[in-house]
Length: 169
Picture 1 (cartoon, rainbow, N blue to C red):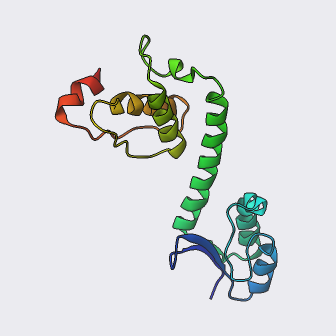
Picture 2 (picture 1 turned 180 degrees about the vertical axis):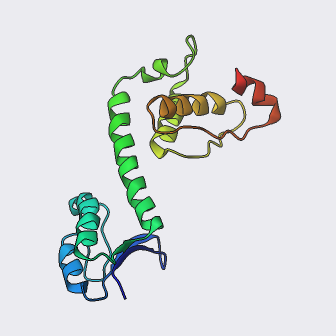
């Protein structure tokens, strides 16, 4: 038996600490501020910001302690999302932020700027407006922003064949 941090999928995916083995009490004490009595963590809590320190301390305390891959992925995604949110808040302070990311001369409509901001904040999304409302511009703007700011390395575009040349351009 060993202690571990894992993702509990019983209701919705949530991080949960399971304490077992000879170091269970030490691990439980280390996590007492981060995890509730049932072992769940509130990711909106300021204490959650110490989760990486907890993992390192738990591994030092008990060599058998495990943080599962999906738990580590959930933690990494949380911190990546926070970093993206902070940077985007800075960028979106400028009303005309999009000029840096779109081809010169393209002036998006306000609802397109809103769509680009939504997609960039989400980090991943589907844009499903009606035909002719400028989904392509919204997707290009959001993808260019996320790429230039280093939040994505590549982007997968699924679109009708008739648009592939526009995307290449």
